[in-house]
Length: 348
Image (cartoon, rainbow, N blue to C red):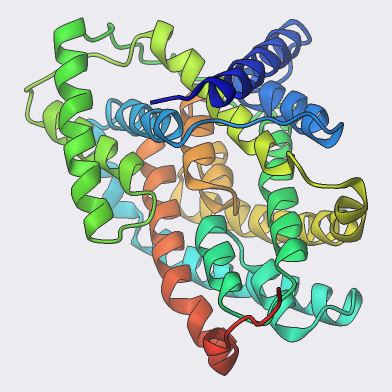
């Protein structure tokens, strides 16, 4: 239940995000319902305004994004997945390359200590990295800012890159008729239950994956048909954009200045790496470049999933690659940090 102060904060956040989405749409910005709110809420938060989204609303948005992804999975998509194993292997190699290039920049270029640099360099899994950082002797504020800059920059830049290089799919968009209210309600309920089970099993992005699993299962078997209605999906995308921007709420400009440049340089480096590898994989496998670009971009899974839907990319391809990336990082990061991952953070 939202208490009164929290409701006011959420209402203001939603208002700022909606205005950002409207302005971005009027200016014909790519993916306006994600990038517009993200930028508007970021600017407002840096100005000192307290903004935020309650956890249960955030989680509900993740479920809806997952359901939207699953509605696009068809038998033909399943057949196409047979050509993806090479891409799965390469995305793991790309993660390692991006991690160590970013680490080198932060450690040797900006002088951060080894632990802070390694945590800040992780190409994704922000919430896990912050949790891991809290248990180590690292500069957690710097890690948070560097990682948040990465997420924000990718949210704003990937749609622009896809649009600028004319990578938006030219095939007619397969528009599913919207689900009926009863079907939608039952799908959401089943997705919440599945997401809860995934949480118990410690899956990354558990609630989003719950929506994906239920939606794919019911659509492939013919139990349900149709997509998420626009009246629900568009507000969800706006709130996802707002969520990205709220990472900068209550952060001082001094803290931002210390970590922003480092985060910006790292983001440029990993984007060049991801884009180069994506071009190679698209050429070899024949998967459209827009899908590979979004799949290899080290952004947040929920954000990249929503972006895939909005940019008409192959959501099954994008989602599966980001899930593999996050699961790989869950194992990789404690290994590369070694004994530093087990040092308690005695900073107060």
